[in-house]
Length: 608
Image 1 (cartoon, rainbow, N blue to C red):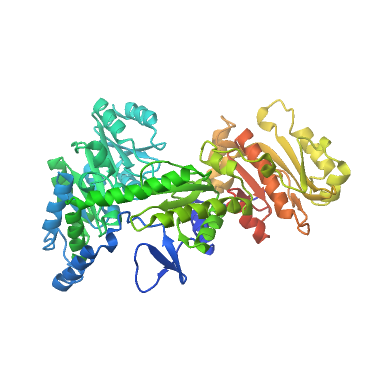
Image 2: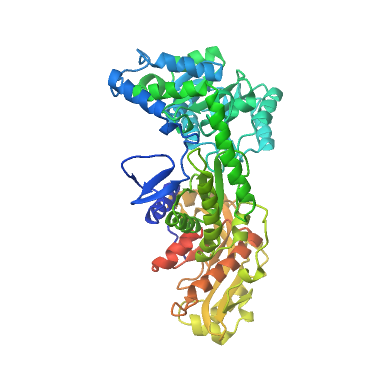
């Protein structure tokens, strides 16, 4: 029986990040003697910068720079004392200005991550419950999970799914005092927004519902005094809503800010907010730069900056509408996401853009699902119209080439993101020139001499062996004992086989990766419920057979194209059967295939 390599969350993250680092996508270092915001130096090459989160370009504003320098000269590089005892001399000025921006009391934190860790355990009582949007930022999820040790109920809903949220509210309302829904104001990957007004209406219907927004990506570029997307939608801040903004990113300085109109709650958080009490406070330079930025936010200049950014956003949107690029969300935020589907396509696309002089970010697991990898592009006031047009031209040119180079299609990418295809692909692009595929659902439909010529001596899956398997695992009285068999043979125009394999669709035990003692307990439950913790799997070969289940003639010039054709067929089976996972086996000895299969999102296993 196949022995599967165990994978857990951290292992998968490590593999994805290791691959991305190897492809030169992440863990890079900017070079150069100075930064302008418009360009960034990577490995000696100057690239137009479309990856910043400083959307208004305030991090390069001379007023913020001068304020930071002067604060260091006057107050030193840090003020090493807890804010519980004494705050830095500039802190009070900053708090007063931020309260004017929000119109309500605020709390300044070192950063948003520490802010969430300090605020969430302070405002959520043991009698409350938490509902998390599936895509809310990791820092919010991490802070909320701490409350599990206190017995606080934590639920999760699909992204922006208000019907599901209401179902959860009905379920939890009789058991809990307050129910906190936690979401981002603007989501950092796709650039989509929370339905703030609809959530406010829902909270009017269910008074127990309290709203907690992380709006760091909605800050400054929108809203009165640049107070952010959530405040722009709310108009005013109700007592049952908490909003986190940022003093970094678009604000141009460092730190984070929480606005709270409930005075008792504000006092409670400030009195004992974990890291807010014990951690070091912001450095004098950061506080001074934030004050300078706040002055800009409190002037009419902020609206000029917002309008300039919106002009660039509108230009980018207009240019994208004339392309077939898979834009995941079309909105007026400065964050855009072009889907690539699998990581390997994203690596190829990003590297092509870098070579052409454009720096963009890649959205990777766990920030997005593996099959929802894509290029995140951010627009800032630094970007000039001619550069924006040039980026779109470069993407239009390189995207289809990245698809072709990584054996995928535009339709596959659109399907991965549930997007409507703008333009149907040429059917000729769905076929591989010079190859033809034979698909069968029984070994009886396959030429015996051909099959045995490829697999005789490889194991008990020669022609006669597969006849025995089909007789044993087809048309049984119990459905759980039935398998489906699929045979794929790919030949060239001379009828010479290039690739061949067979797949089975069968019920597997979910605990195949678990320790023996765990499986023993599960087997006891299966005495009463044989289907307990079982799922259907589409696997190369079967759990009954061992050996090399793939014939591949790597001396043939079209062998990689043959793999592409096999993947097309597996995609079709995946959509039709909807297995819990696809298992491809026996590739660990071949680095090229291992990388190819890993980056197409398939589970890899090795036989004993």
